Image (cartoon, rainbow, N blue to C red):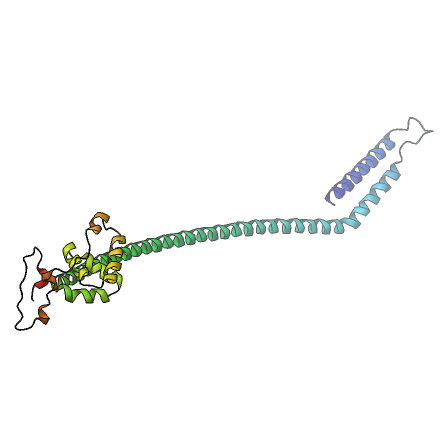
Length: 253
């Protein structure tokens, strides 16, 4: 619209100038060729007036369209600025959210690492405590076994044999292994043959037992001294004890 207005103004101005120049030249000079009319000043003036009338009639409309176009351009510029501003705000918000998420992720990872470290420390502490308790329990069991072994070592063979024979094989083997080989053989000699043979076989198969040493553990036949039961001796009985290198079975407690 603005360009059309400029074209109309230029055209009307040109026609008006031509008409004015024609009037001046017509009043001062005669036409060179009276037989040919190349230019009509009155027609030019009429056309110029017509253009002016058209321009005046469309002036308000053109001004309205120009004003509307300027308003649209202004509105478009405002919208562009607002959109740019909103876009920057959105970018800032997204950036802040990303930073917050990264911070949250870092805190969670740090907390998880701390919890893992605490868990590992507690697990190591629990393992150490368990190992310590197992060692204490082992020492207690060792003391109990030693005390029990000492008790059976001090008992008479004929008293210890039936007690050990009545135990489960595993317990009986542990007690027998805690005794000296000669004590073990003496107690086995006081048991029933099948029970003594069973325990002897299990002792040979027990882990950590030297086979050569286990072969030396054989139930001994009761000697004269071992066969004497002082609990059943008659008051007037005459006991003659033959010399022997092993007389533990006749010891009275």
